Image (tube, rainbow, N blue to C red; front, side):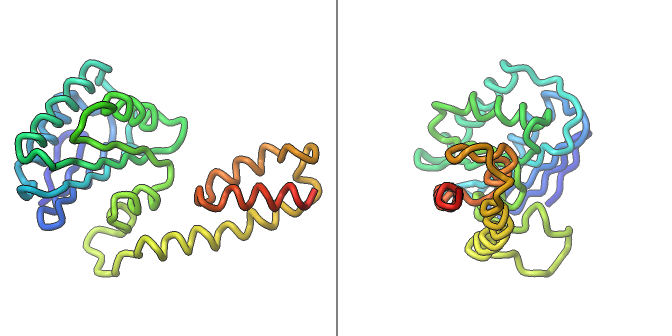
Length: 208
C-alpha cells in the first residue's frame, strides 16, 4: 500500500512490518503526524516495526524541535499501547551536511530516552537498508523482481571497495607525518565498514 501526502510518500509493507518513507520538498508538521497514525494502524500486533526514512530530497522544513519531540512522544505511546515489548526501529538516510541530515539528528536526539523507539542516521543508503534488515528497500526500482542483496553480501561488497583505500594508504604522498594520516585518507576511511577501520589505520602506520 502506498499513501501519498503533499511532500511525503509512504509505502506500507504490512506483511513485513516495514514502512518506507520518502520526503521531497518542504513537509508540514501535520503530514508527519498522519504518517505515524497510518503506519501504526497497519502494524501487525505484537511484533517489531521497521522504518526507512529517506530525507535526501528535503528542501525546507516547518518542523520545530517542539514539533519533533511531541511527534515522537505520541509515536512512542502508540507503540507501547500495542504491546509492552514492541518497538519501532527507524533508519534515517541523508547526505552528511544536508538539511535532511540535520533534521535526522533532531529526531535522533529527541528519541533518546523513549523506550519503544530506536533511531539511527546513515549517510549511505545501503548501510541504512542493511541496518533495517531490508537491503534494496530504497535502492531497488519500484516493481523490480530482482532479489534484494543480503546483509552479508553487502558487507562483502563494502570490503571489496576498501581495496582502493588500502592502495592509497601505501602511497608515500598520502601522509603528513609518520603518525597522522592525510585528511583525504581519513575521509576515505569513513566510507569503509567500521570493523575494518582500525586494521586500515594500522596498515597505514606500518607503511610510513
